[in-house]
Image (cartoon, rainbow over all chains, first blue to last red; front, side, top):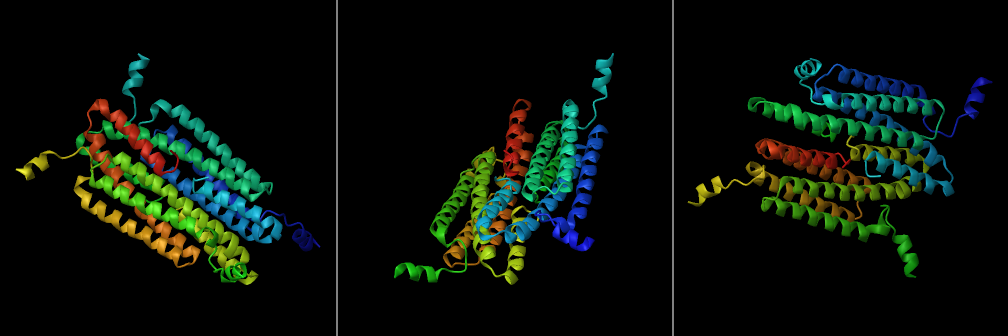
Length: 102
Length: 102
Length: 102
Length: 102
């Protein structure tokens, strides 16, 4: 049965449910970066370029927060007790990097 | 004479001198975003994906800081006194957005 | 037996082990803020004041990361399954606020 | 006459006009840090402590942005041409530190 097969094949990675959504967001971000390239090509006003870069940063933060959330819910919670400490270390190191303190 | 022609054609935008370098960086960032898309496609470990997103954020911050620097040097300094107040408003609003407070 | 007494008195809050250390850091940060007040009083150079504010931000981020880490380890992991989802929501909302996206 | 003397002795630092306001904000921030110390003393819930730290970070960012703004307007714009390049270097380094990239 395909459904069962899919269910048992669920990978350890946590964000499976939103994989499509995540890839769509990343495609959009890729397009935004290409757009900034075009703005520079066309000698657009620096402040407008910076504003667009801020929008890309916000979109990337949103993707990263979604990944963190799924990691916390699936990889950390789902781990056995022995692994949870290591997984939490990884989680916090990732948070520190996103806060630009890692 | 090409030199003169180029000199008179200098646009208002400030980062002309490093336009090539800026576009190269943006191409590299676009490739990094595509790389993250591939990592998600391949069900790579969430923390590794987040680490890569942090690297993209750092690269974008560097581009934004370069643009701000050129804006401050060329657009703000080069403006006449009447314009400088407005240009400084724009500069500070851009800084606030990059600090995620705008 | 003191050991048992201490063990049973452990509060729900997670960072008990480092409560003293945390309070010392906060006292130091309070002193740094007072120092910035004095720098302004003495008409010190703006850039030096901003540098000192950046140092305070870094110290506060460190305190917040320590609290998050303990929250993840004690409050989230220690919660029963029914509570873990809510605790993780809280954790992620706190991370978003620290990343200035909340 | 002291008043006149003071007026002509306007210091190089840029934020004179709002010195009182700035000091009031710093006093309030100092009180907020003391409040966090009390929250830890009282074993308050970690997430509430972190929320309060985020509020302090926002208040400090606002102070830093105010100082940057005045620096840009007074110290950088007011500098003679020879000094402006150095002042702009300082400004951008301060922005990078506030963006946690310096």
